[in-house]
Every structure is written in C-alpha cells, then in structure tokens.
Image (cartoon, helix red, strand yellow):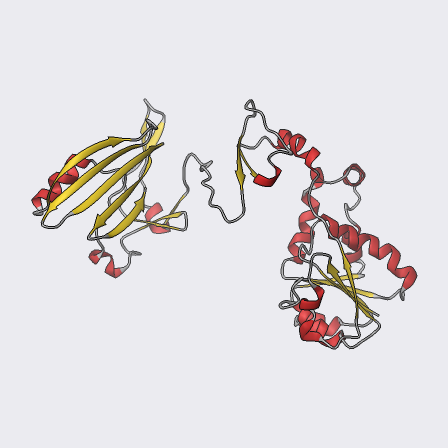
Length: 346
C-alpha cells in the first residue's frame, strides 16, 4: 500500500500529531518495515524548529522537555531511520533509499506542483494506494489531470488555529503593540480602550495602512566604507558621531550606503533627490529663477493635523503643486500639469 498526504500546512503542529499518531497505528495495520518519507524543501528546518518552541505546546510535551525527552516522536524516529526527510523527489539519496509500500507527507494541496505530481502519476492507477487531501480542496478539479483513477481518495479536516476565547489571554501574554483582526469577527471579540495595544480591523480586498513599529531603520554600510569611519564622542549628549560620504540607496524598505567605488558609473547623470517636506516659499523662489511664475495658497481641512499648501503656476503653462502634511513627519505631494498628475508620498 502507498499512502500519500497532500496538505497546505505541511508541518504545523497538527501535522506533527498526525505523523506521531500515525506511527502508532500504522504498524498494526501495515508491515512493520513500512517506510515513511517527508518530502519538502523546508521540512528539515521546520522539524528542527520544534525543539525551540516548548512554550507553545501542551503541558504533557513541556514536561518531556524538562525530563530530557524529545518533544515529538519524529525526533527519535528519524534517528532510527523510520522516517526519512528529503528536500525534493529527485534527491539522489531518496532515489537510492526509495522502497514501497510507504507513507509520504508532501505539499502541495493543489496537486499541480511539488512532489505530489510525480507520485500521483506513479500511483493513480493503483487501487491499493490512498491519497489524503484537505477537506476544503475541490478533489474533482484537483484530480482531473490524473483521471481515470483507481487510487482511493480520503478528504480530512486539518484545522490550524486558536479558539476565539483564547485570543484575549494570548494577547495578554504576548503584549503586542499593534493587532490586526478580521472585520467579520469584530462583534465576537471586543477590545476595550484601556488595552496596551492598538487594534485595526481588516476586510478582504481593502487596503489598510499599518503604522511602522520601528523607531529607526537599519542601514547596511559597505565594508570598505565602514572601515573608514572615525568616531568622535559628544559627551554632552552621550553620542558617537562620524562623517562619511557615499550614496544612499533605498529599495523594498532596505537602506544601503555605498562608497564611491561601488556606485554605478552612471550615477553622475542621475538627478539630485531631495528628502523631506518642501518649503512652499522656497519652492516658488526656485521656480521663479527657472522662469516659472505662480503664487502660494495655504489651506487646512477639518482635521487640524491635515494641512495643505498649493502652488498655482500660471506661466509659462498652468499647473498645480499640492503639498499635504498629515502629521508624524509624513505627507504627500501631487503635481498636476496639463491634465496629468503625479503623486509622491514622503
């Protein structure tokens, strides 16, 4: 018999229990020398991760930790070579080790990618084989490429999550600064104003602005540039400062500072970029020197923190520059010229 588990959450706590309990039941039903394989590129790392998360486990497993026992049975079973872990179905060691009958745990629930595709092509015509899928999977659509099928199919529920009544105790333990909660559960779990964290409710297909919890950003400095740093101490402020020259690159939320040797040769042709909120009067003065004339209009919305400044340009062509400050050093700029607008946030 060949038993194939294809689930979305390959190695969460529920799957650990399935592996462990299955090893207790299967030997009574199938040959004692039955081989069990876990095929996943992240399986080895995730299995090792279970050794450092005892605080999330039940009391019985926590007691095993203090007695020196393995938290899960798979640790000993891997050592005894009753479970074999491989990153891919084409791994050389798997091809050498492979034996049937066997039990295989692998992604992906869609049956369109990963090792499940190869194994189903091999076993779909075997009536002594069993495929275990998640209950929410549309089996008829998932199995279309493998029909006609003689293989048996079993759909089970592998729920992973926590009950609503455990949400508040968990938040009290974790003490987060910000919590995102589904909008459709707003009426089922209430949060008071005295909470130490902010709560934002999200809905499907809606954009939600989440404040950054970092007070500062990490900066990656080139090695040769870092070796040139000479620190000076400011005793009055208990700070160390240094002077350096390089090019600051910001991409995907990451900041990198490169030395002149690492800068792109075309960087000399790049336009100068200015950081921060522009001063409208200074902006108008610079535009005037370039032959662009206009005037400044100040405005304020109902919210006092939402201030806007508009520069109206009349000559040589009509245009509009709107600078809006929304507090906390953030804002946006909109440039509208000839019916075309450009929006820039800062």
